[in-house]
Length: 269
Image (cartoon, rainbow, N blue to C red; front, side, top):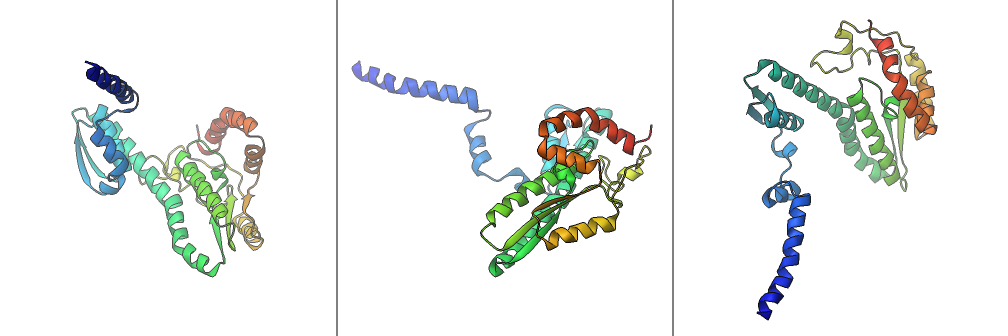
């Protein structure tokens, strides 16, 4: 009897802890959790696979479509409700566009840096100049993916600058604001193969810096190896200063004003 009591005294607390863990932290069986941590990642194993999802207009089918779209799968959708299926299709297309933007602005820049950095490290000399944007300092309405790609650039290269601080390699972030170019007109929209200039409501009444002046100030920054510079006319330059040195004030001001400014500047009524 005493042996049974000792066994229970050891096993009951362990059982209670196990039950608590399962209830609080586990949302799938142990096999799934093991492979979630140690197995192949979906975006590696499933990239470029063709996946046909039935019942894709709502529920699990809908959200599986979004998840696989993020992994780079080629999605075939089918369901009974055509209108809902069209909604899911459009959202998947928007996810594709956001991924293209991140690949272009962020992953591409990082990949190029990784390609040239070993040569610079061997020579213990070099200068990596990254053209970012003031949109890497603060967000702007209708530019969430673009701003995210620039925020990521800042995080990556700010960190890389620290890691290379004991070398003779300089990292510079050049952050221009609006200049006379077709960047805004050709910006991605949520509609695949359609840029802002193709939208019927698009206008552009913004004040922009001459491209020649922007390029000259970039060259000055490069010559003097400045870590980070902001090159812009007002009000974008003022917003950047406000964001950097008065973040609480900036958050309130941008929340109250940026959306209406954007609609007035870029979209006719």
